[in-house]
Image 1 (cartoon, each protein chain N blue to C red):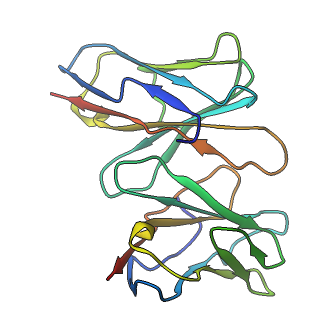
Image 2: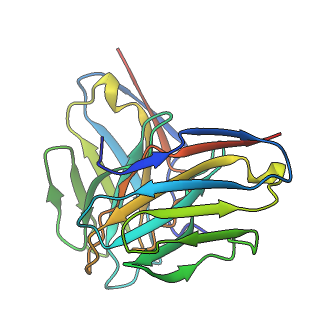
Length: 114
Length: 106
């Protein structure tokens, strides 16, 4: 257990539905990252926050995806109008931002879109 | 795209040293080399990182070549619990490739 928690751990939804995932980082960590991982591939960077500011977004993050970190603590990742191609593991990580960034990952939320 | 190259898979006998190579020929002077591993159905776990000098911690050793174009992660006494996918990353954005699947056998 790294201290990063994610909820839910598993989600099954029908195509077209909206889903929201939550990540609770290690409390003193100011940076929070979201990744997506499909079977057989390494994690792909989606976006990251420093405190409440979203500083970078990958081109993978289409307009159906939105992430927030309203108070600089927990974060949510919402996917609107889900598609079957959104089926993946969604990973959250946190770090104490500095020049060296050792990221601590949560267990992930596994999404299956039917 | 990932900027590192790793073998797809490796085997290692339990108790022996596992040496996992990584090529990062395009690494820039101020980029660190990070190693993470991912055990099945879990999130990635940080192992070690380095810039120029060799590094050692309680989990592993990291040997970086003088030209910094490649490195080797060494697990000195591999156990069955070290079976995982090992990722070598050379940027603080953590662009993962497909990693090396290490299978430790009894």
